[in-house]
Picture 1: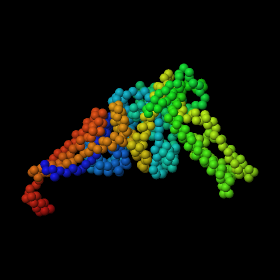
Picture 2: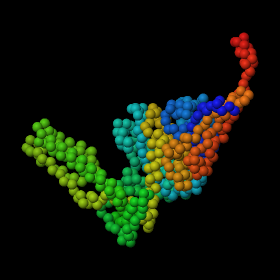
Picture 3: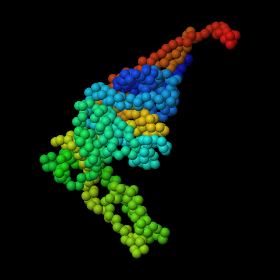
Picture 4: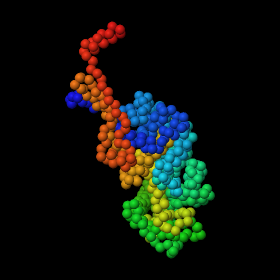
Length: 521
Protein backbone atom coordinates (compact mmCIF):
# COMPACT_ATOMS: atom_id res chain seq x y z
CA UNK A 1 0.00 0.00 0.00
CA UNK A 2 1.15 3.52 -0.74
CA UNK A 3 0.88 5.67 2.41
CA UNK A 4 0.19 8.84 0.47
CA UNK A 5 -2.90 7.28 -1.10
CA UNK A 6 -4.59 6.35 2.21
CA UNK A 7 -7.89 8.12 2.72
CA UNK A 8 -10.49 7.85 5.53
CA UNK A 9 -14.08 8.69 4.70
CA UNK A 10 -17.74 7.90 5.45
CA UNK A 11 -17.06 8.26 9.19
CA UNK A 12 -20.10 7.46 11.34
CA UNK A 13 -20.82 7.20 15.09
CA UNK A 14 -21.19 3.63 16.30
CA UNK A 15 -20.21 3.33 19.99
CA UNK A 16 -23.47 4.33 21.72
CA UNK A 17 -25.47 2.53 19.04
CA UNK A 18 -23.48 -0.68 19.54
CA UNK A 19 -23.90 -0.44 23.31
CA UNK A 20 -27.67 0.05 22.91
CA UNK A 21 -28.05 -2.81 20.42
CA UNK A 22 -26.38 -5.23 22.81
CA UNK A 23 -28.79 -4.14 25.56
CA UNK A 24 -31.72 -4.82 23.21
CA UNK A 25 -30.24 -8.22 22.40
CA UNK A 26 -30.10 -8.94 26.15
CA UNK A 27 -33.77 -8.02 26.43
CA UNK A 28 -34.61 -10.17 23.38
CA UNK A 29 -37.04 -7.65 21.96
CA UNK A 30 -36.35 -9.06 18.50
CA UNK A 31 -37.49 -12.52 19.61
CA UNK A 32 -40.69 -11.05 21.08
CA UNK A 33 -41.52 -9.16 17.87
CA UNK A 34 -40.77 -12.24 15.78
CA UNK A 35 -43.22 -14.23 17.92
CA UNK A 36 -45.87 -11.66 16.95
CA UNK A 37 -45.32 -12.36 13.27
CA UNK A 38 -43.14 -9.36 12.49
CA UNK A 39 -40.85 -9.68 9.47
CA UNK A 40 -37.07 -9.26 9.73
CA UNK A 41 -37.42 -5.90 8.00
CA UNK A 42 -39.98 -4.67 10.55
CA UNK A 43 -37.85 -5.90 13.44
CA UNK A 44 -34.66 -4.31 12.14
CA UNK A 45 -36.44 -0.98 11.61
CA UNK A 46 -37.90 -1.16 15.12
CA UNK A 47 -34.46 -1.79 16.63
CA UNK A 48 -33.10 1.12 14.59
CA UNK A 49 -35.91 3.30 15.90
CA UNK A 50 -35.42 2.42 19.58
CA UNK A 51 -31.63 2.83 19.43
CA UNK A 52 -32.00 6.17 17.70
CA UNK A 53 -34.36 7.47 20.38
CA UNK A 54 -31.94 6.37 23.11
CA UNK A 55 -28.84 7.88 21.49
CA UNK A 56 -30.24 10.84 19.52
CA UNK A 57 -33.76 11.75 20.71
CA UNK A 58 -35.31 14.06 18.14
CA UNK A 59 -38.23 14.40 15.73
CA UNK A 60 -38.69 11.77 13.04
CA UNK A 61 -37.36 14.18 10.41
CA UNK A 62 -34.21 15.00 12.36
CA UNK A 63 -33.75 11.36 13.32
CA UNK A 64 -33.92 10.25 9.68
CA UNK A 65 -31.19 12.78 8.79
CA UNK A 66 -29.06 11.65 11.73
CA UNK A 67 -29.37 7.99 10.74
CA UNK A 68 -28.33 8.75 7.16
CA UNK A 69 -25.61 11.29 7.80
CA UNK A 70 -24.19 10.70 11.27
CA UNK A 71 -24.80 7.19 12.50
CA UNK A 72 -23.85 3.62 11.60
CA UNK A 73 -26.96 2.26 13.33
CA UNK A 74 -28.35 0.75 10.13
CA UNK A 75 -25.11 -1.13 9.58
CA UNK A 76 -25.65 -2.71 12.99
CA UNK A 77 -29.34 -3.53 12.57
CA UNK A 78 -28.98 -4.45 8.87
CA UNK A 79 -31.86 -2.21 7.84
CA UNK A 80 -31.18 -0.55 4.44
CA UNK A 81 -30.25 3.03 5.23
CA UNK A 82 -31.57 4.23 1.86
CA UNK A 83 -35.08 3.18 2.96
CA UNK A 84 -35.06 5.40 6.07
CA UNK A 85 -37.65 8.20 5.91
CA UNK A 86 -39.57 10.12 8.54
CA UNK A 87 -42.75 8.34 7.44
CA UNK A 88 -41.13 4.93 7.91
CA UNK A 89 -40.13 5.98 11.43
CA UNK A 90 -43.66 7.23 12.16
CA UNK A 91 -45.05 3.90 11.00
CA UNK A 92 -42.58 1.87 13.04
CA UNK A 93 -43.42 3.82 16.22
CA UNK A 94 -47.13 3.14 15.67
CA UNK A 95 -46.41 -0.56 15.11
CA UNK A 96 -44.48 -0.73 18.38
CA UNK A 97 -47.28 1.02 20.24
CA UNK A 98 -49.77 -1.55 18.93
CA UNK A 99 -48.03 -4.23 21.05
CA UNK A 100 -47.34 -1.94 24.06
CA UNK A 101 -49.09 -3.90 26.80
CA UNK A 102 -47.74 -7.32 25.78
CA UNK A 103 -44.24 -5.94 25.23
CA UNK A 104 -44.26 -4.21 28.62
CA UNK A 105 -45.18 -7.45 30.41
CA UNK A 106 -42.53 -9.32 28.39
CA UNK A 107 -39.79 -6.82 29.31
CA UNK A 108 -40.86 -6.75 32.97
CA UNK A 109 -40.60 -10.53 33.16
CA UNK A 110 -37.37 -10.66 31.15
CA UNK A 111 -35.49 -8.17 33.37
CA UNK A 112 -36.62 -10.02 36.49
CA UNK A 113 -35.20 -13.24 35.00
CA UNK A 114 -32.01 -11.61 33.69
CA UNK A 115 -31.06 -9.92 36.94
CA UNK A 116 -32.81 -12.22 39.44
CA UNK A 117 -35.16 -9.50 40.72
CA UNK A 118 -38.16 -9.86 43.00
CA UNK A 119 -40.73 -7.09 42.89
CA UNK A 120 -41.54 -6.44 46.53
CA UNK A 121 -41.67 -2.65 46.26
CA UNK A 122 -43.35 -0.57 43.55
CA UNK A 123 -42.72 3.13 43.08
CA UNK A 124 -45.67 5.03 41.67
CA UNK A 125 -45.67 8.55 40.31
CA UNK A 126 -47.07 10.52 37.47
CA UNK A 127 -45.88 13.43 35.43
CA UNK A 128 -47.20 15.48 32.58
CA UNK A 129 -45.72 16.81 29.41
CA UNK A 130 -47.04 19.63 27.30
CA UNK A 131 -48.02 20.08 23.67
CA UNK A 132 -46.95 22.78 21.27
CA UNK A 133 -49.98 23.95 19.29
CA UNK A 134 -53.68 24.18 20.05
CA UNK A 135 -54.55 20.46 19.69
CA UNK A 136 -58.24 21.24 19.13
CA UNK A 137 -59.13 17.78 17.80
CA UNK A 138 -57.27 15.84 20.50
CA UNK A 139 -59.20 13.73 23.02
CA UNK A 140 -56.29 13.43 25.47
CA UNK A 141 -54.72 16.91 25.34
CA UNK A 142 -56.33 18.89 28.17
CA UNK A 143 -55.46 21.88 30.30
CA UNK A 144 -54.24 20.90 33.74
CA UNK A 145 -51.60 21.75 36.32
CA UNK A 146 -48.34 21.79 34.40
CA UNK A 147 -45.22 20.71 36.31
CA UNK A 148 -43.19 22.77 33.82
CA UNK A 149 -45.35 25.84 34.60
CA UNK A 150 -46.66 25.81 31.02
CA UNK A 151 -50.20 26.77 32.00
CA UNK A 152 -50.77 28.08 28.47
CA UNK A 153 -50.31 24.64 26.93
CA UNK A 154 -52.46 21.52 26.92
CA UNK A 155 -51.07 18.47 28.70
CA UNK A 156 -51.03 14.70 28.69
CA UNK A 157 -50.42 12.68 31.88
CA UNK A 158 -47.98 9.77 32.02
CA UNK A 159 -48.34 7.38 34.97
CA UNK A 160 -45.41 5.04 35.57
CA UNK A 161 -44.76 2.25 38.06
CA UNK A 162 -41.15 1.10 38.47
CA UNK A 163 -39.42 -1.33 40.81
CA UNK A 164 -36.55 -0.32 43.07
CA UNK A 165 -34.06 -1.18 40.33
CA UNK A 166 -35.68 1.36 38.02
CA UNK A 167 -37.31 -1.09 35.58
CA UNK A 168 -40.80 -0.20 34.40
CA UNK A 169 -43.55 -2.49 35.65
CA UNK A 170 -46.47 -0.66 34.13
CA UNK A 171 -47.19 2.60 32.33
CA UNK A 172 -50.28 4.34 31.08
CA UNK A 173 -51.20 7.58 29.35
CA UNK A 174 -54.14 9.69 30.53
CA UNK A 175 -55.89 12.93 29.68
CA UNK A 176 -54.06 16.05 30.82
CA UNK A 177 -56.73 16.98 33.38
CA UNK A 178 -57.14 13.49 34.88
CA UNK A 179 -57.30 13.58 38.68
CA UNK A 180 -54.49 11.84 40.57
CA UNK A 181 -56.95 9.57 42.38
CA UNK A 182 -58.44 8.27 39.13
CA UNK A 183 -55.04 7.61 37.56
CA UNK A 184 -53.80 5.76 40.64
CA UNK A 185 -56.89 3.57 40.85
CA UNK A 186 -56.76 2.66 37.16
CA UNK A 187 -53.03 2.04 37.30
CA UNK A 188 -53.24 -0.27 40.31
CA UNK A 189 -56.03 -2.29 38.67
CA UNK A 190 -53.90 -2.72 35.55
CA UNK A 191 -50.77 -3.38 37.61
CA UNK A 192 -52.48 -6.26 39.38
CA UNK A 193 -53.28 -7.88 36.02
CA UNK A 194 -49.89 -7.12 34.47
CA UNK A 195 -47.67 -8.42 37.28
CA UNK A 196 -47.12 -11.88 38.68
CA UNK A 197 -49.16 -13.26 41.58
CA UNK A 198 -46.02 -13.25 43.76
CA UNK A 199 -45.96 -9.46 43.60
CA UNK A 200 -49.58 -8.80 44.48
CA UNK A 201 -48.84 -7.99 48.15
CA UNK A 202 -46.09 -5.54 47.26
CA UNK A 203 -45.61 -2.06 48.73
CA UNK A 204 -46.51 1.01 46.68
CA UNK A 205 -44.31 4.01 47.47
CA UNK A 206 -45.87 7.38 46.66
CA UNK A 207 -44.90 11.00 46.98
CA UNK A 208 -46.96 13.45 49.03
CA UNK A 209 -48.81 14.87 46.02
CA UNK A 210 -50.60 11.56 45.43
CA UNK A 211 -50.98 10.36 49.03
CA UNK A 212 -54.49 11.66 49.79
CA UNK A 213 -56.54 9.85 52.42
CA UNK A 214 -58.84 8.67 49.65
CA UNK A 215 -55.93 7.22 47.68
CA UNK A 216 -54.41 5.49 50.70
CA UNK A 217 -57.71 3.82 51.57
CA UNK A 218 -58.13 2.75 47.95
CA UNK A 219 -54.60 1.27 47.78
CA UNK A 220 -55.22 -0.72 50.94
CA UNK A 221 -58.63 -1.89 49.71
CA UNK A 222 -57.00 -3.23 46.53
CA UNK A 223 -54.65 -5.41 48.56
CA UNK A 224 -51.43 -3.37 48.52
CA UNK A 225 -49.49 -1.78 51.35
CA UNK A 226 -48.27 1.81 51.01
CA UNK A 227 -45.50 4.14 52.15
CA UNK A 228 -45.61 7.88 51.59
CA UNK A 229 -44.76 11.34 52.85
CA UNK A 230 -47.71 12.91 54.68
CA UNK A 231 -49.33 15.72 52.72
CA UNK A 232 -49.06 18.14 55.67
CA UNK A 233 -46.70 18.42 58.60
CA UNK A 234 -48.22 16.71 61.62
CA UNK A 235 -48.66 19.14 64.51
CA UNK A 236 -50.12 16.89 67.20
CA UNK A 237 -48.25 13.69 67.92
CA UNK A 238 -46.56 11.77 70.74
CA UNK A 239 -43.05 10.36 70.73
CA UNK A 240 -42.89 6.58 70.97
CA UNK A 241 -40.61 6.07 73.95
CA UNK A 242 -40.14 2.42 73.09
CA UNK A 243 -38.29 3.58 69.97
CA UNK A 244 -35.51 6.07 70.83
CA UNK A 245 -34.18 8.59 68.33
CA UNK A 246 -31.96 7.03 65.66
CA UNK A 247 -29.47 8.71 63.35
CA UNK A 248 -28.62 7.54 59.83
CA UNK A 249 -26.62 8.99 56.95
CA UNK A 250 -28.04 9.85 53.55
CA UNK A 251 -26.18 9.26 50.29
CA UNK A 252 -24.26 12.52 50.77
CA UNK A 253 -23.26 11.55 54.32
CA UNK A 254 -25.59 14.11 55.87
CA UNK A 255 -27.08 13.13 59.24
CA UNK A 256 -30.79 12.30 59.30
CA UNK A 257 -32.65 11.73 62.57
CA UNK A 258 -35.51 9.22 62.73
CA UNK A 259 -38.12 9.10 65.48
CA UNK A 260 -41.19 6.84 65.60
CA UNK A 261 -44.31 8.72 66.70
CA UNK A 262 -47.96 7.96 67.41
CA UNK A 263 -50.74 10.08 65.93
CA UNK A 264 -54.08 9.98 67.75
CA UNK A 265 -55.97 6.77 67.05
CA UNK A 266 -54.19 6.09 63.75
CA UNK A 267 -53.02 2.50 63.34
CA UNK A 268 -50.48 3.32 60.62
CA UNK A 269 -46.77 3.54 61.38
CA UNK A 270 -45.54 7.18 61.44
CA UNK A 271 -41.93 8.31 61.37
CA UNK A 272 -40.66 11.84 62.04
CA UNK A 273 -37.70 12.76 59.85
CA UNK A 274 -35.35 15.65 60.64
CA UNK A 275 -32.63 16.75 58.24
CA UNK A 276 -30.32 19.60 59.25
CA UNK A 277 -29.27 20.12 55.65
CA UNK A 278 -32.89 20.38 54.56
CA UNK A 279 -33.57 22.69 57.53
CA UNK A 280 -30.90 25.16 56.40
CA UNK A 281 -32.32 25.16 52.87
CA UNK A 282 -35.90 25.66 54.07
CA UNK A 283 -34.83 28.41 56.48
CA UNK A 284 -33.13 30.25 53.64
CA UNK A 285 -36.21 29.93 51.42
CA UNK A 286 -38.48 30.97 54.28
CA UNK A 287 -36.44 34.14 54.90
CA UNK A 288 -36.47 34.97 51.20
CA UNK A 289 -40.22 34.47 50.80
CA UNK A 290 -40.91 36.37 54.01
CA UNK A 291 -38.87 39.35 52.80
CA UNK A 292 -40.53 39.39 49.38
CA UNK A 293 -44.04 39.00 50.81
CA UNK A 294 -43.55 41.86 53.30
CA UNK A 295 -42.01 44.04 50.58
CA UNK A 296 -45.15 43.43 48.55
CA UNK A 297 -47.33 44.46 51.49
CA UNK A 298 -45.22 47.60 51.96
CA UNK A 299 -45.73 48.55 48.30
CA UNK A 300 -49.51 48.13 48.68
CA UNK A 301 -49.45 50.19 51.90
CA UNK A 302 -47.36 52.92 50.27
CA UNK A 303 -50.02 53.30 47.59
CA UNK A 304 -52.52 54.36 50.24
CA UNK A 305 -50.76 57.70 50.75
CA UNK A 306 -50.20 58.47 47.08
CA UNK A 307 -52.58 60.73 45.17
CA UNK A 308 -53.09 58.21 42.36
CA UNK A 309 -52.55 55.13 44.51
CA UNK A 310 -55.00 52.26 44.96
CA UNK A 311 -57.16 52.97 48.04
CA UNK A 312 -60.58 51.45 47.43
CA UNK A 313 -61.22 48.56 49.79
CA UNK A 314 -62.11 45.99 47.10
CA UNK A 315 -59.12 46.92 44.94
CA UNK A 316 -56.71 46.80 47.88
CA UNK A 317 -58.00 43.36 48.84
CA UNK A 318 -57.55 42.22 45.24
CA UNK A 319 -53.90 43.32 45.36
CA UNK A 320 -53.38 41.51 48.67
CA UNK A 321 -55.07 38.42 47.20
CA UNK A 322 -52.75 38.40 44.19
CA UNK A 323 -49.75 38.76 46.50
CA UNK A 324 -50.95 35.77 48.54
CA UNK A 325 -51.28 33.70 45.36
CA UNK A 326 -47.71 34.59 44.49
CA UNK A 327 -46.34 33.42 47.85
CA UNK A 328 -48.71 30.61 48.97
CA UNK A 329 -46.27 28.87 51.32
CA UNK A 330 -45.60 31.95 53.49
CA UNK A 331 -48.87 33.92 53.32
CA UNK A 332 -50.80 31.33 55.34
CA UNK A 333 -48.67 32.20 58.38
CA UNK A 334 -49.65 35.91 58.31
CA UNK A 335 -52.51 37.83 59.86
CA UNK A 336 -53.33 40.91 57.76
CA UNK A 337 -55.78 43.62 58.83
CA UNK A 338 -57.02 46.72 56.99
CA UNK A 339 -58.46 49.93 58.47
CA UNK A 340 -61.28 51.34 56.28
CA UNK A 341 -62.87 54.84 56.46
CA UNK A 342 -66.44 55.91 55.76
CA UNK A 343 -65.64 56.25 52.02
CA UNK A 344 -64.69 52.58 51.92
CA UNK A 345 -61.07 53.50 51.38
CA UNK A 346 -58.26 51.67 53.13
CA UNK A 347 -56.23 54.04 55.29
CA UNK A 348 -53.91 51.56 56.95
CA UNK A 349 -52.63 47.99 56.56
CA UNK A 350 -51.07 46.03 59.43
CA UNK A 351 -49.64 42.53 59.43
CA UNK A 352 -47.82 40.07 61.64
CA UNK A 353 -46.40 36.60 61.24
CA UNK A 354 -47.84 33.95 63.57
CA UNK A 355 -45.94 31.31 65.51
CA UNK A 356 -42.62 32.06 63.86
CA UNK A 357 -40.59 30.12 66.50
CA UNK A 358 -42.75 27.04 65.85
CA UNK A 359 -42.42 27.59 62.12
CA UNK A 360 -38.63 27.73 62.35
CA UNK A 361 -38.62 24.55 64.44
CA UNK A 362 -40.47 22.74 61.64
CA UNK A 363 -37.77 23.48 59.06
CA UNK A 364 -36.23 20.26 57.76
CA UNK A 365 -38.95 18.13 59.34
CA UNK A 366 -41.31 15.84 57.45
CA UNK A 367 -43.23 12.67 58.22
CA UNK A 368 -43.41 9.24 56.63
CA UNK A 369 -46.50 7.07 56.90
CA UNK A 370 -46.91 3.38 56.06
CA UNK A 371 -49.44 0.61 56.45
CA UNK A 372 -46.58 -1.88 56.90
CA UNK A 373 -46.15 -3.50 60.29
CA UNK A 374 -42.55 -2.53 60.92
CA UNK A 375 -40.35 -2.22 63.98
CA UNK A 376 -37.18 -0.71 62.46
CA UNK A 377 -37.17 3.02 61.70
CA UNK A 378 -34.20 2.59 59.35
CA UNK A 379 -36.20 0.11 57.26
CA UNK A 380 -38.94 2.67 56.64
CA UNK A 381 -36.33 5.28 55.71
CA UNK A 382 -34.56 2.87 53.37
CA UNK A 383 -37.77 1.90 51.60
CA UNK A 384 -38.83 5.51 51.14
CA UNK A 385 -35.49 6.51 49.65
CA UNK A 386 -36.19 4.23 46.70
CA UNK A 387 -38.52 7.01 45.48
CA UNK A 388 -35.36 8.66 44.13
CA UNK A 389 -35.33 5.96 41.44
CA UNK A 390 -38.61 7.08 39.91
CA UNK A 391 -37.49 10.71 40.11
CA UNK A 392 -34.48 9.70 38.04
CA UNK A 393 -36.75 7.80 35.64
CA UNK A 394 -38.80 10.88 34.86
CA UNK A 395 -35.68 13.04 34.58
CA UNK A 396 -34.22 10.66 31.97
CA UNK A 397 -37.51 10.43 30.07
CA UNK A 398 -38.10 14.17 29.95
CA UNK A 399 -34.55 15.40 29.46
CA UNK A 400 -32.33 12.66 28.03
CA UNK A 401 -34.99 10.98 25.87
CA UNK A 402 -36.83 14.11 24.67
CA UNK A 403 -40.31 13.31 25.96
CA UNK A 404 -41.22 17.00 26.01
CA UNK A 405 -42.64 18.93 24.34
CA UNK A 406 -44.96 16.97 22.02
CA UNK A 407 -45.46 18.27 18.49
CA UNK A 408 -47.60 15.44 17.05
CA UNK A 409 -51.00 16.43 15.71
CA UNK A 410 -53.01 13.27 16.35
CA UNK A 411 -53.44 11.20 19.50
CA UNK A 412 -52.11 7.93 18.05
CA UNK A 413 -48.81 9.59 17.16
CA UNK A 414 -48.66 11.17 20.62
CA UNK A 415 -49.13 7.78 22.28
CA UNK A 416 -46.49 6.24 19.99
CA UNK A 417 -44.05 9.08 20.76
CA UNK A 418 -44.37 8.56 24.52
CA UNK A 419 -44.15 4.78 24.20
CA UNK A 420 -40.98 5.03 22.10
CA UNK A 421 -39.43 7.10 24.88
CA UNK A 422 -40.34 4.37 27.38
CA UNK A 423 -38.75 1.70 25.16
CA UNK A 424 -35.58 3.78 24.91
CA UNK A 425 -35.64 4.04 28.71
CA UNK A 426 -35.57 0.22 28.91
CA UNK A 427 -32.27 0.37 27.02
CA UNK A 428 -30.90 3.11 29.29
CA UNK A 429 -31.86 1.38 32.52
CA UNK A 430 -30.66 -2.05 31.39
CA UNK A 431 -27.22 -0.54 30.79
CA UNK A 432 -27.11 1.70 33.87
CA UNK A 433 -28.38 -1.00 36.23
CA UNK A 434 -25.53 -3.31 35.26
CA UNK A 435 -22.96 -0.50 35.46
CA UNK A 436 -24.18 0.54 38.92
CA UNK A 437 -23.74 -3.06 40.07
CA UNK A 438 -20.06 -2.66 39.13
CA UNK A 439 -19.74 0.69 40.89
CA UNK A 440 -20.05 2.87 37.77
CA UNK A 441 -22.71 5.52 38.40
CA UNK A 442 -22.38 7.93 35.45
CA UNK A 443 -25.57 9.21 33.84
CA UNK A 444 -26.83 8.32 30.38
CA UNK A 445 -25.74 11.51 28.62
CA UNK A 446 -22.18 10.94 29.85
CA UNK A 447 -22.28 7.33 28.65
CA UNK A 448 -23.33 8.50 25.18
CA UNK A 449 -20.62 11.15 25.14
CA UNK A 450 -17.92 8.63 26.03
CA UNK A 451 -19.05 5.94 23.59
CA UNK A 452 -19.54 8.38 20.72
CA UNK A 453 -15.77 8.47 20.30
CA UNK A 454 -15.95 5.00 18.71
CA UNK A 455 -16.54 5.37 14.97
CA UNK A 456 -17.16 3.32 11.85
CA UNK A 457 -14.68 4.28 9.11
CA UNK A 458 -14.01 3.43 5.47
CA UNK A 459 -10.32 3.47 4.56
CA UNK A 460 -9.10 3.45 0.95
CA UNK A 461 -5.58 3.05 -0.46
CA UNK A 462 -3.85 2.03 -3.66
CA UNK A 463 -1.62 -1.02 -3.83
CA UNK A 464 1.44 -1.64 -6.00
CA UNK A 465 -0.72 -2.91 -8.87
CA UNK A 466 -2.63 0.38 -8.97
CA UNK A 467 -5.81 -1.24 -7.60
CA UNK A 468 -7.87 0.61 -4.96
CA UNK A 469 -8.45 -1.33 -1.74
CA UNK A 470 -11.52 -0.46 0.34
CA UNK A 471 -11.88 -1.48 3.99
CA UNK A 472 -14.70 -0.58 6.39
CA UNK A 473 -14.29 -1.35 10.06
CA UNK A 474 -14.92 -0.07 13.57
CA UNK A 475 -12.31 2.04 15.34
CA UNK A 476 -10.59 0.71 18.44
CA UNK A 477 -12.47 1.79 21.60
CA UNK A 478 -10.83 4.25 23.98
CA UNK A 479 -9.90 3.12 27.49
CA UNK A 480 -13.07 4.54 29.05
CA UNK A 481 -15.27 2.67 26.58
CA UNK A 482 -13.38 -0.57 27.20
CA UNK A 483 -14.16 -0.15 30.92
CA UNK A 484 -17.88 0.10 30.11
CA UNK A 485 -17.84 -2.89 27.75
CA UNK A 486 -16.01 -5.02 30.31
CA UNK A 487 -18.34 -4.02 33.14
CA UNK A 488 -21.34 -4.95 30.98
CA UNK A 489 -19.70 -8.07 29.56
CA UNK A 490 -20.45 -6.70 26.08
CA UNK A 491 -18.38 -7.14 22.95
CA UNK A 492 -16.14 -4.18 22.07
CA UNK A 493 -16.55 -4.43 18.28
CA UNK A 494 -19.54 -5.20 16.09
CA UNK A 495 -19.00 -7.86 13.42
CA UNK A 496 -18.77 -5.43 10.55
CA UNK A 497 -15.64 -5.64 8.49
CA UNK A 498 -15.70 -5.38 4.73
CA UNK A 499 -12.72 -5.41 2.43
CA UNK A 500 -12.75 -5.40 -1.34
CA UNK A 501 -10.47 -4.42 -4.22
CA UNK A 502 -11.42 -2.37 -7.24
CA UNK A 503 -9.17 -3.49 -10.06
CA UNK A 504 -7.42 -0.90 -12.15
CA UNK A 505 -8.60 -0.95 -15.79
CA UNK A 506 -5.88 -0.61 -18.40
CA UNK A 507 -6.16 2.62 -20.45
CA UNK A 508 -6.59 0.78 -23.79
CA UNK A 509 -9.34 -1.40 -22.29
CA UNK A 510 -11.01 1.65 -20.83
CA UNK A 511 -10.88 3.39 -24.23
CA UNK A 512 -12.39 0.30 -25.85
CA UNK A 513 -15.17 0.27 -23.25
CA UNK A 514 -15.80 3.99 -23.77
CA UNK A 515 -15.97 3.52 -27.55
CA UNK A 516 -18.31 0.59 -27.22
CA UNK A 517 -20.52 2.59 -24.89
CA UNK A 518 -20.54 5.51 -27.33
CA UNK A 519 -21.33 3.33 -30.37
CA UNK A 520 -24.18 1.51 -28.67
CA UNK A 521 -25.50 4.58 -26.91
